[in-house]
Image (cartoon, rainbow, N blue to C red; front, side, top):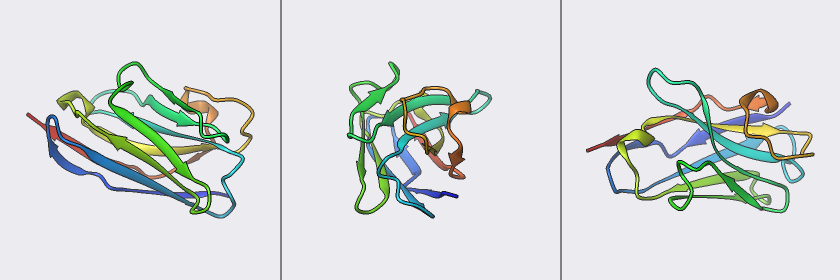
Length: 124
């Protein structure tokens, strides 16, 4: 089993920055794929970014060039640096892990472990 806990959410003005963290426990996450998803008000959960076991990043078009995903396997932790935030980035951000690590997926159903989420609110 893997337990994931997100932190770092909060309120920020448009154009600002926020850094999210996701700490895992229960097993080492070094050979897994880790990802961030988000769910805005009245919207479905959507893929934001993922990072594979070699720290190769993958981004949705909506955040490419503004967000940066990274991981520190020594700390079992993943990060999401969010810059140039827009009001449409307002959402609950979820950390997810695919323990198989065989491929990088962008659909929520392919991730077996989830955190409870952290809210990011971007105001104009």
